[in-house]
Image (cartoon, rainbow, N blue to C red; front, side):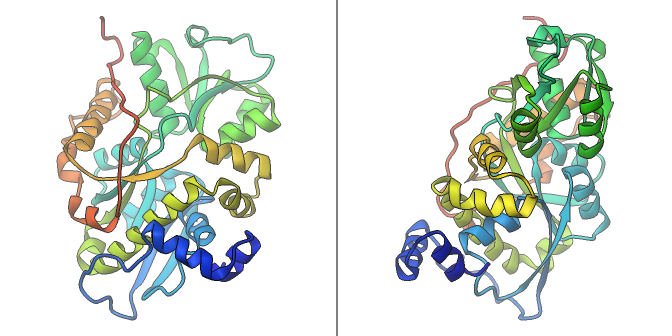
Length: 342
């Protein structure tokens, strides 16, 4: 969607809207090397993700390169595509990204965002006998292996000081998990954003616990080492535009939700709920953030999800920070390990 058509649909005068984007910081990205005109960025995305956001905010106009979008249903296949070199860069939550890096993903995290942890939750059917976190003990919970939903279960185990075998995990992709949840093959579903919104609004599901205070709320843009070297200037420009779009979206939930609903096929109500669960802003890659992700990796390792200890420091590239513009952090999180005693 072109910026003019989007803004007219949203009720803005074109000139006023352009001024608004300039005030948000939509100027040229910080100077990098010249971008070759035949550059193609192969971006991995999930429905309702970066592409929908950037189209809604109107920041894709005048690109000095081509974006080839690849859409995936979840983070796991998206990061597998990054590992295979099918895409140059991918956007995913911190937990699945750390899981993929521990498995040998040859890539680096080049940008970070924060939204708080409420977008991930463990939900149960409306008539479930489960009414609190303690009722989850011994129950079968569906989630994607290495997903943010998986990590939420591990975080709950840690907080309750339960051992990993206290919960029976069924590793399922979202569509399969939804089907299993509907027919009662699993007792609960640990999932995220759109699936949480759909389950609570359309299926009457109840949230037993969400990730507020349990999850970092961080999401990452990860790029292959080859793309960082050969497409650096284009990546920096892309990150700049995406950061501007994120700041715009926080103040324009209804406008973003309209595009998001069309992109995902979700109802407008689900779109609004999903976006309200995860207001997202760019944050700098710094020592504090890296230390937080080390705790994520260590918690994964202590739950025997990844084998040896992963030193996450080597997986970050902070040299793209200047492309993001204003950044900030608002959701501190602490972690314990499964079975720890106070």
